[in-house]
Length: 164
Image (tube, rainbow, N blue to C red):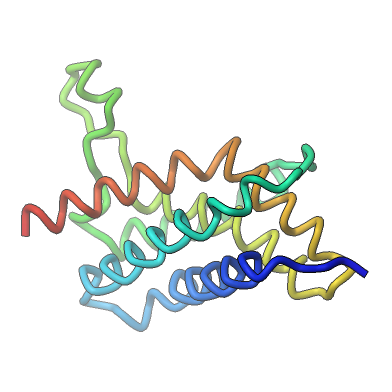
């Protein structure tokens, strides 16, 4: 029997809250700013709560975006529409390119974080036999993919708070 670290439970709670909020975005119709404020708070919490887990010896695990590309794109489109003028932002590469195009997208960032977290959460709630694999997936996918999306989105959300 695996001895689960309490920090893993706290992280799983944050993941659950984040996924529920993403799945329930439609309840905020007409108030994307409030939804973004709540998403931003949960993203900061996720960043804090994954730090102790990064010290775990999570080996490489299977990771692929290909298995759910259509679902990712569908959520991305719905969030992009929901966020409207709050979606696009200047990425660091945009400033270097100097072509006047914004390529940063909160909908893209949130969608990618959501799918990486949700896939491992589904394993985590499947029972104790799957918790170690879920932890490995969270840590590995954070390192190779959703860490940058999380940081880009929280940076942009912080800039929104300054501007508003």
